[in-house]
Length: 287
Image 1: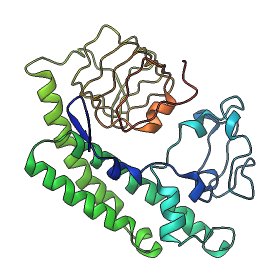
Image 2 (image 1 turned 60 degrees about the horizontal axis):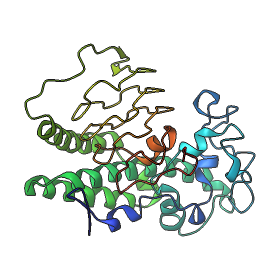
Image 3 (image 1 turned 180 degrees about the vertical axis):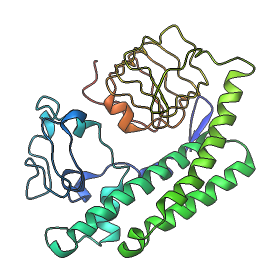
């Protein structure tokens, strides 16, 4: 067990939620739809292999993805769903040798990715939660979600994912509210005017450096190209926030709530950006 700023961190809980491309069959390069508007040079249909995917399921231009206009690839994270589907759900049988079940494998991968994302958030919630009753609830939900990830392909396809997600979200929101209220302790929200797009907070291109965002609720917010340099985002809920090209150089995200590798990969940071112990600093960030 490791502690960071007094917060516990259990490596074993995160180990299977990290990408392991060596034990995957390039699912993200085949199953996903690529959009030219989301960090890709052209559109690609779901189920169609990327032109850069080699016969050994490795990327031919992996070291030059960003230079080739494939920022979307460097930002993507499957939360370990790829190796789970490849090695556990289908026992090491790839989609090329099972063309009749290839589409099913792709569908299972997309569902597994969502289940593993929920596991990531639940594990993060457990990491920051000190209340014993809440910890028990979270442990039960983690166990139940893990059970779903180990079902056979047909059962995974038939899952009522929306119902399970609603139960997970209720626990995540509870954890968020407790953490944020403790961080703010009587302070009023610092965000006075709240412009929205489709019900989500809109801070696209906004300069947020002079706003106290500690303990703020930025769930699902549009933070595309926002200026967050040197901003303290402790106990700030960032679940689902769009951080594409957000400038987080020198920002403190050590104890941000529900931040993921995908969000970090999409943002602009540097060696002074402080990250949670569960995340990895992208190699292409400014030094």
